[in-house]
Length: 212
Image 1 (cartoon, helix red, strand yellow):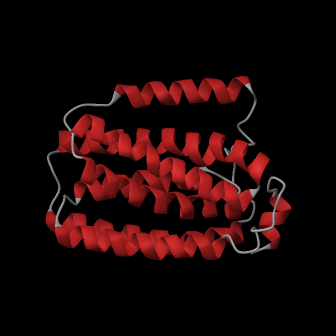
Image 2 (cartoon, rainbow, N blue to C red):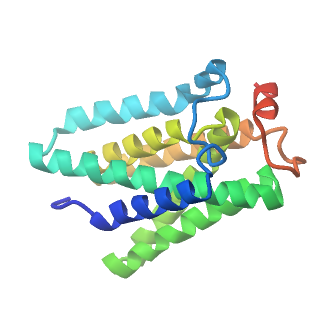
């Protein structure tokens, strides 16, 4: 909250260098969506983000300095985590296990990683709760990754979600709202993944477009 997280910036540089070296940018989804029609699938997350924005505006914004730091830090987190989990990791796991299993494997790993926050905060219960949220986020994020065949909108969604959730502050009422949103989007993600349960080969553009 008070300073930039340079470790996340270093992770972005490392991931970008690795992806460039192996020429993975297209494979990990750094490209436009497979069909402009599929952008409508972003409507539900966009609606929830808009509601979160209203909550932030209603509760009030922090100082300009803090606001800028939060915006930059959450943007870097969105870029690094999406490149890693919905990009590199999902590409590798889906190549071996298929889309359906890869969605659950990467979501579980994404959630589990967030329990490590307890090593910093010392609050395991809060980290476990965050890991639960992250795991559900991982499912519907992967679903959008599959259906859109791009990771770029996910970076934007991830950034805005973290940024607005942070700016909204912590309260029991807000936690219930975010929990409700997370459950709805979790089941939305499962619905988007219909038709991919028997997919054993890596997804491709035609496959994604055909399920729209």
